[in-house]
Structure formats: structure tokens, C-alpha cells
Length: 460
Ligand code: SAH
Ligand code: SF4
Ligand code: F3S
Image (tube, rainbow, N blue to C red; front, side, top):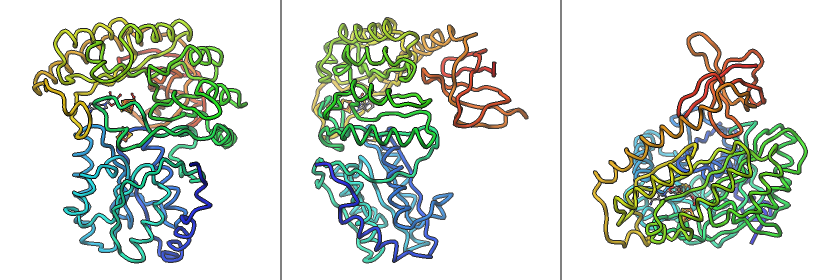
């Protein structure tokens, strides 16, 4: 069900908290781990907190309420979040009224909840990522009753519209279009913590984009765990085309796509609107071996993947491709791994995000035999990265001497000189000098130097 938060009990809790903390100058701080979806959720959390009357804190130390928006994708991410949360124990001792809330994907894991409830007494509440509209109620319980709340399993697959985010950037905006995942790749925890796929109404997405463009946003990123399996009265290519039809000077990106939903229709929309839709595609491969792909439940073969990559390269001139790869999946042989390297050599991605397989309790892969030694996994990762660094550099070299339209993000002083940073339409970071650069504006930059991951240039 899709509902508006303004029509729920949340509004009552928002005003009650507002009344309770009025004039006290209480402040919030939100810390974000994980993917863009979490970044977008954190902006909504900030929006709700400011509606409740909290002010933004400059640092965590001066905060009266701290939210940690967590990621459960790999063990390392969980350890990092837990150790950070553990650090707030001392702050709570100094300030017994401090509220610490754990939000996000870890909060949807029963084992983590139990741990927080039993061993982290200074944690006031947990909140699953699909239940953000419940934040006001939990904050109210903490402020008014000093009650600890650990709700779980209440995720009913709803979508709450009408949460006004406090956005980090005035010129780049995340727009969530769908939530959840139905794919159950055997290694992945996302379907368990984010629930089933559900899509927003296309009219809600388009009008959000429209008002962002009117407010000066220059880059929209449509977000979803499987953004291209979006489906309402429109499919994803139709939604993308409708967004591209909006008038204004802006570009559109989207993340993350599943190869199985990367249709000819999507490719032709990218081709048709090449001025508006950025020539960049993140196409997660995971493995180049058919045997491993099958065990991963990825539902495509290496040949199918290669065809999609080829079709994107042929149809969208200058397109940059990036991917995710997992090394050391249970049972991965040296031959399987070489098949992955072979796909990297064939596709020549601009960028590869490579991860060592991390076992997630409850997933199908956790029950597979053939776990690999840590040394084998790190050795494979090192080999892969060495090869890919060379490919990334080669992919950047043809950009030397070209003029790129850069959206300027930030500015700093390096060796006494003002240096700006922005991104090419193909999503590559560029550092440049310019007299006329302005944060949040496009500027034409000539590329003069390149590394594997960064470009350098100056104003033309
Ligand atoms: N929905 C996206 C991204 C999901 S998470 C997709 O389908 O591609 C981002 C990346 O983390 C995945 O693409 C995968 O490469 C990696 N990942 C997910 N689970 C993992 C695990 N258990 N161990 C190591 N890497 C993992
Ligand atoms: Fe995880 Fe696969 Fe869903 Fe991506 S498609 S979120 S990797 S289960
Ligand atoms: Fe992590 Fe959840 Fe995103 S597990 S990668 S924050 S969907």
C-alpha cells in the first residue's frame, strides 16, 4: 500500500516531540553506512528530525540524538557499525538523555536486534529501513517515556510518501523509485532486510523530479536495489523517458540495474535521450563463470552478459560501464576465476568494484560447501585489481584532449591554487582549475592528464 505520512499517526508524534523539546536547542546527527539507498534514507531521517524540532549538529559530540544508518551487506560493514555504535556508550554516560537509534539494514536482522537490546543498553531503539515513517513514534517513546523500543518484522511492504528530505546537496539529488529486492542472489542479505520489491507511482516520481529541477538540481539519480525492475503503470524505460522529457538543464543517472532487466527498450531510451541520460551504466557481473553464476542465482550467462555490454557500447557512444565482482564465492576454482578475468578483459569496464565473498547468515550461499581460504581470496582480489587498474587507465586515455561538460561539486585550495572537483557525464571524477567555475553549475573542461581513477584538466 502507498500512503502519505501526513495522513498517519506520525504527524501526531511529530507535534508531540516538537512541543516537548521546543526552545531547548536540541540537535541531531545522522551517520550513514552502505549504499545510495541508505544515503537517500538518511536525508529522509534528517527531514523527519528537523520536522520534530531538532537542529542539525556540527559534530556527533554536540548531538542530543544520534542515528546510525547501517549496512549489512558484508561482515566488515557490520563490524564497523557496531564498533562505532559501541563508542557512544561513553557519551551516553556523560549525557543520560542522549538518544541513540540504530536504523537501516542491520536493524532488520533479528540477531543484531537481540545483541543491541541485550548488550548495548545505551541504544534507545532500532528501526528497519522500510519503516522510516515510524521514526517519530520511536523518538516520542524515547523522549517522553524513556522507553527502549525494538520493533521488527512489522514491515508490511508499504511505501510512505510525503517525507520531506533534508538534502545534502543542492545540485545532485537521489530519487528513490522502487524499494526491496525479489532476486535472492544466493550470497546476498538485501532481500531479507529490505523486503519485497515495490514501486512508487510514476506520477509521484515525475513530480518530485520536476520540483527538484525547478529548485536548481542539475543531476537526478533514480534509485532502487534493482532500479530497472521498476513497475507501476509504467516500466523503467518508460519512467526514464518521461523524466528525460522534463524541461530544464539537467542530467539523469540511475542505480543499480540487474542484467536480467536490461532490455533493448532500456538501451534504446538511453540512446534516444543521450543528451539527458548520462552515458554511464553500472552493470553488476558478480562472476564470469557460468557455474558460479548459477550457484549465485544470477539468472544470466556470461554470453548473455557480454551481449548486453556490447549492445550498450554500440548504442550509446562513449558510454562508461562499471560493475561489481565477488571473488572467492564458495567452490570458485582457479578456472572460474580466470573466466571472470576474461570477462573483464573482454568488456573493459571503466571501473570495477570488487569484493571478497562474505558469508551472510541465513542466505543460501552460507550453506554451500567449498569455502575458500582467506589467502586464496585476497590473492585473487589483488590479481584482479592489478589487471583492472591497467584497464581503467586505458579507458581514460582516449579522454585526453577532449572537452567534457562537468558538473562542479566542490572546491579546495591545493598548493595555493583553487582546485575544483566534479564529474564527467560518464561519472569520472575530474580535478580542474577554472576562473568561472561555480559549485552546482556545469562548465566545459579540457582533459589534460589522467590516472586510472581520476582526470585532471582546466577550463577551455
Ligand atoms: N542490487 C545491487 C547491489 C547490491 S549490493 C545488485 O544487484 O547488483 C552491492 C554489491 O555488493 C553487489 O553487487 C555484490 O557485488 C556485493 N555483495 C553483496 N553481497 C555480498 C556478500 N555476501 N559478499 C561480498 N560481496 C557482496
Ligand atoms: Fe542482492 Fe541480488 Fe538483490 Fe542485488 S539483485 S540486492 S545482489 S539479491
Ligand atoms: Fe547495505 Fe542495505 Fe544498501 S545492506 S548495500 S545499506 S541495501
